[in-house]
Amino acid sequence: MKIKNLLLVFFLTILTLNFAAAQEWQTPVIDGYGKVKYFKDAGIQPEKDKEYKILYHLTSKNEKEGVNAGLWHIARQVNLFGVTGVPSQNVKIVAVISGPDTDIVMSDDAYMKRYQKKNPNLDLMKKLTDYGVKIEVCGQAAAEHNIDPYSELNKYTDFTLSALIDIPTYQMQGYVIMF
Image (cartoon, rainbow, N blue to C red):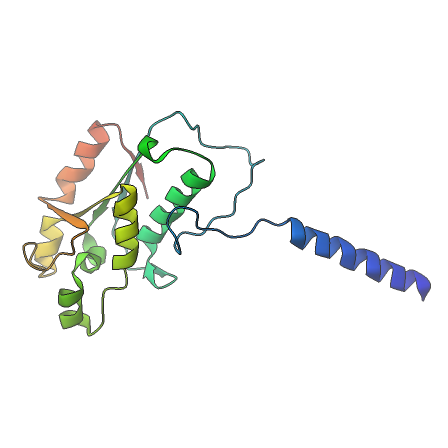
C-alpha cells in the first residue's frame, strides 16, 4: 500500500510540474485574437532582422472563436512575430478577400441590414490594420455578392479591381502566399 501511495504522489507531482512548465496561451500584439504559445527552444524561429512579406487569400466562411478563421490566423501570425521579437516594421501582410468570405468586408450598417447583427470581424480588422496589415476586397467578388464598394465597405478594407490582379501583383513584389 505504501508503494502505491508513493507512486501516486510521485505521478501527481510529475503531472503538476508538467502543467506548471507548460506555456500559457497569449495574444501579445493582437489582443484577444490569434492566441499563441511560445516555445523558445522550437526548431525554427523567425529572424528578427529579415523582412517578411506575406500574402493571404481569404476565401472561406469558416470561423474560429466567433470571427473569420483567415483573419484569426493572420492575428496568430502577427502574435508569433511579436512574441519572438520581430519588429512590426519588418512584417508586411496583405489579406485579399474574395469568394464566400466577401461579406466580412461589410460595414456594421450594411451587415446589419443583411444579417440582422453587427459584423463580428470589425474589432479584429481594426486591430490588424492598426498593426499594419492591409485588407483588400476583390471588386469582382463584391459585385457578385451585391456589396456596394462605395457605400457598404467597412473603413478597414480597401477596394481593388480583382483578386486575379492583386495576387500576382503582390507575388511579383516578393510576397509569399499563405493558404
